[in-house]
Length: 185
Image (cartoon, rainbow, N blue to C red):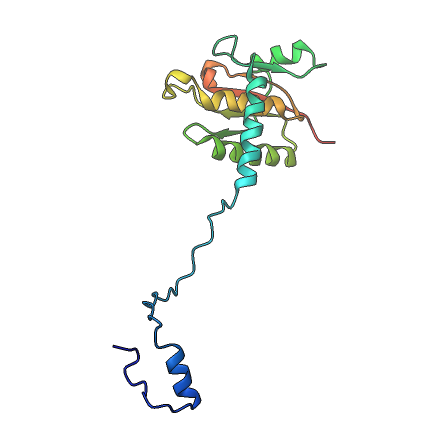
């Protein structure tokens, strides 16, 4: 049987007949389904660059953490060039506390934002001695207190922090810090 079956056998040479004779041996292909959906674009992380930068900063902080918690639970820091006497007075509670922030129970990123906002407000208000409550890290597991070491590092890296030390037992003990800030002129 020839395809299409209506090919005239007579010698009519009009164009349609000529075309039909020339394609009489052709086999039709099965039509492919028409795809209307476009493929989804590849997923891009919205904050990929910022996340990678934060990972880099955190990895560099590990080196700076050495020595912060080496002396047990009690934290001390005094900026270079500042008298040991100032740290001693701070440790004994001789400076009056003007404000405080409670960070324990927060995640590390939220605690960092909260601490930065608090310190910025303290500097704006020209406060010099504040208390930062970070908690003791009793639920942190084998890794030790996470927030405590992070807060200590963040304060150490802030150029306007003169000194800090763990609070007296009545003010939170090793779960809080007295922080002495540089006054804005």
